[in-house]
Length: 205
Image (cartoon, rainbow, N blue to C red; front, side, top):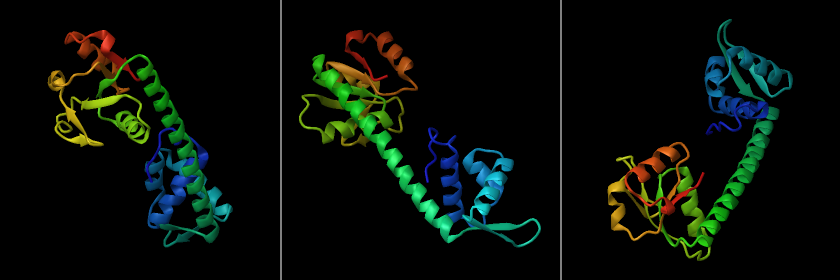
């Protein structure tokens, strides 16, 4: 299961992580769980005591220092329920992100942009491309994706070429959308310092 920094502080999310981890690793230790959950071993010990009292897990003491953990049938049912609830919550977040991307695309079109480049071949870019590919004709075309990572250049993302900033002039574009949150200011300054028209720079964030 992929950890999500937005949910990691939730007690119920930690419960889901621990139950899933025990389900897949019966020989795991509390230190292992501590590392996965990003909490102290003492906190894991507290959680284990709680789950044991609630009948979710069973502790098998193989020696004074060695303990194995197994989910009970009740624990397995709880694990499945939490996974379903997690997927429902994740889907809500994803759907909200889709709506946000659609609104941004609509605003770009209203401003008159028709042929644009994305700058930053990350998750935001991928989501925007997915929304565009799944939408009816918006009148907006993505010509290519710029990225400074040489390992990405020359590859495709959703069938769109990933190019370096030096290849921008090959395209007849009227806007460059920065799709990187972490490097937004760096990319914007890089474009401005290179002489690109500020009116052609679109910021997602």
